[in-house]
Amino acid sequence: MLINILLGTLVNMKQQNSTSYPPLEITNTKAAAYLCNPQRSVFLYPFIGRERSASEVAQEYKANLKAYLYQIERMQQLGLLRHTQTKTRKGSPVKYYRAVADSFFVPFTATNLESLESMVDAWSQSLQPVFLKSFIHGLESTGEHWGVRIARENNGLLSIAAANNAVAALDLLAPDVPVLLEGWLTDLHLDQTDAKAFQHELVSLYLRYLGRNGAQRYIIRMALAPMPDQSELPPAW
Image 1: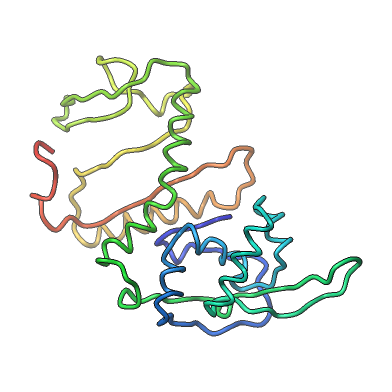
Image 2 (image 1 turned 60 degrees about the vertical axis):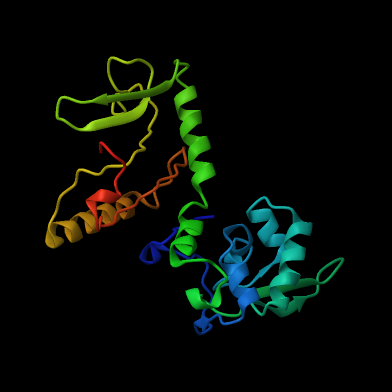
């Protein structure tokens, strides 16, 4: 399943139905809590904009059918999913479901979260365990003795990165190194025009490679935000 978090313009829902359901703003606090929980709302995604059966979804995403049936019942109770039709086949009839809207909006005021920061953080961190596991697997696949190297580079910038010695940082662009990239970059100073152009180039670069059917699947994390206060950086950065 392709999940583009906080990059709404990049979401590409496939197998859209010819009919569409209007957008829906969620005001029920229980439904809002369900949608704002990445571990729960993931069960709704396959039914947004298309009609599916529980068995189809479970098979497509290699999920437990009983778990999906439980979540389907829960989503119907919350008013997020509706039963659309039942098809007669050999054996038991097959029920089909679809989300009650093709897009949902959950205002922060409908949640019980402490702050808008908490709401955004829940989504931005939802795939962090997957990324971390994938990144470490890439490092360990080289068989090197890994650790963290902390140094001030010749260009004056502080560098904290995975490395296998204290002499130099790992050259991630070397041809024999796994395709890995991770880190916070805080030395970018741009005016509004350049910053917006940089933002567009990042998105365009992603879209340029999206859809290629390569042998290896990759997880990528993109983030960009203006820093309102230099003092918010940790000391020495």
